[in-house]
Length: 307
Ligand code: FBP
Image 1 (tube, helix red, strand yellow):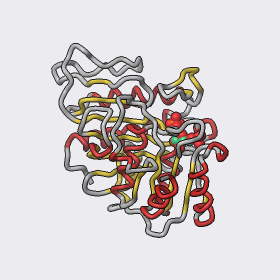
Image 2: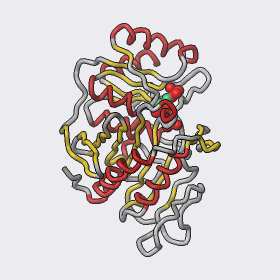
Image 3: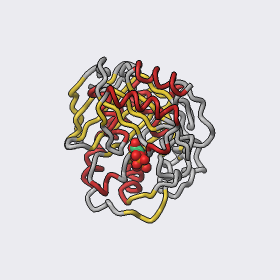
Image 4: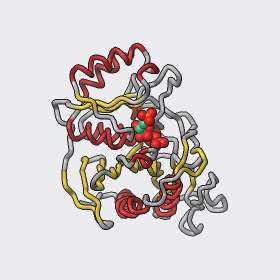
């Protein structure tokens, strides 16, 4: 099944094709490079490699005006078609400044979400948001979002304005396996990030309730955990902490795209007060936010506890 918007289709096709390559390229790229990304997390070789691969390919698509990634400081303005393409090197620059930026969609990527799981060989993902507005943008400006899950098999969840679909990705191809994905009505699983002593009292009270109702599933990579919520129903959250009220996850690269996917699948997203998609971003592309996604009733209850 192809997406009707040709630019979104080109982005999705590029990510699908690249996923197989990224998966194969993880072998031998598990080591830390001694650098931190703009959010202060240790980068592994694979983070930088996957970012450069996706930056080159996505910024070359006609109709993509900006590329931003969790692994680089600044947004790349993609050059006009007569401008020779954007400079996609991982040097934190702003693209080719001699050429005017193209009109079109802005693409925000977390090339390898949960890359610390490479050490223990656990699940990881790639997250992509396609915004119809310059970055940083509101989640409501998304026209599509997708994540790739590198699990025992490689799958992709794609949400567009019309529907949510699941694909298997093999050999560069994407094969539709589930149409009109919706959250199961009866929630089964939950996963909450951050250390328990660092949770606020209000969040701890909510978590104590949920623990008595649902089954714990937490793998340290948001995409693996969110995919369980989309498969079984439930709630995933990375709350604001006593030591860091803004939490850990990033609004443009993680919160918005995953919030969009879950909302399109019939669930809710929240920063603890309101839908992630309605949050007005600051001008920091790496802005962090508490993130909660899952069945509507569970997110409603969370907001009641945190209000
Ligand atoms: P990275 O993309 O830098 O690995 O961080 C994001 C993330 O790994 C999420 O995928 C995950 O939900 C969270 O951090 C796990 O954090 P913690 O190790 O604190 O549980």
